[in-house]
Length: 352
Image (cartoon, rainbow, N blue to C red; front, top):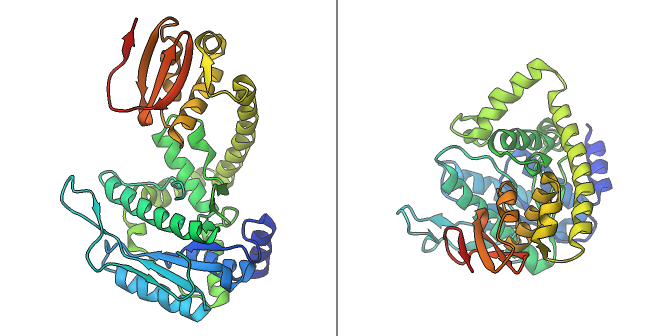
């Protein structure tokens, strides 16, 4: 894909538009460097803010930050640097190191985007989740202030790796849908291009990037998928990656049809009678329960659908409650079930 082809493809998607503010999450790697360049060329330099988060977790973190500052200065784009520091003591929570501060380039705005399904290594989840939360919270804050979007540099290569990880780790149809091109303020303009495409773009544009050495470590699940599973699948069939993406697209289209069916069943209500829930096929019952749980949680409530039959079996008389995964509670009263947040962890409770 040529530079002109990539520019036109991203512009045609309409995620980046002239003059619309956008916060580009900029690690300094090839994908985010490519994204930053495209955002500047499509949205215009004044509309773009680059966000670099230096967690201080890698020896190369300071050099990465300097590199990002240099590239942004060369491109003439505003750069916001955040330096959160994580407490190491168990149970001490997340803290900001004294003096870590936020460094702002002149004119940069001061955005919460949902997680992107990043793959974590066993035992690394706390640090990885903390870093992701810090990154997206900072981006959300900036985007909120400038009434703009948050742009992440996920590519189709990342999409394949994410779907494969979710296939292995989560028994859920939704896990196979992959990342969406837009999720609220979060946009992913590069989901149609490969990691090789972004590298080619950077070379052609004379843009340097940083390599994260952790990408080559088998400590992380994503690296094991990238260097082990994906090549094995391609050895089995050369179109393996394209086929994974094609199946995900079919599933997304079918998911839209299923969403419409759930809409018809609920008819705008945030509750359903137990009699109606029991009358549904098991598949539809799971979808309805999952929708109500998601709305109660304000986010995808993973694992709730698998408890749909338990919800349907709640007593039709009196009142009862059932605590579900993801901090969700199903409450039945006089034959109608509603979903809300769990006030505290507890077992199934019932009252007459």
